[in-house]
Length: 61
Image 1 (tube, rainbow, N blue to C red):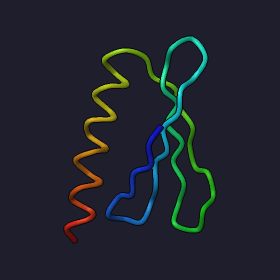
Image 2 (tube, rainbow, N blue to C red):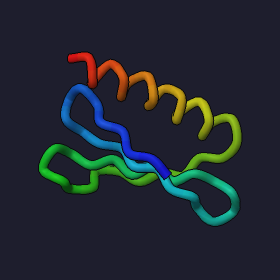
Image 3 (tube, rainbow, N blue to C red):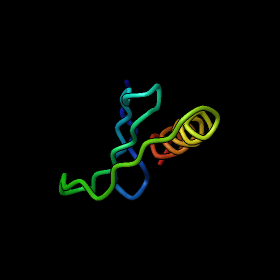
């Protein structure tokens, strides 16, 4: 669905998860997966909104 880059060089990729959730996969700058979590409903929407803001801040740096 979307890719976000944070100011620390980490990236978060979102994708649709089974059951209607959203999976968030976080990778370190070297490309290794450090976490994978699935959220549903408002929790997923709030995290994605925060990632959009973080991505925009990283682009300004």
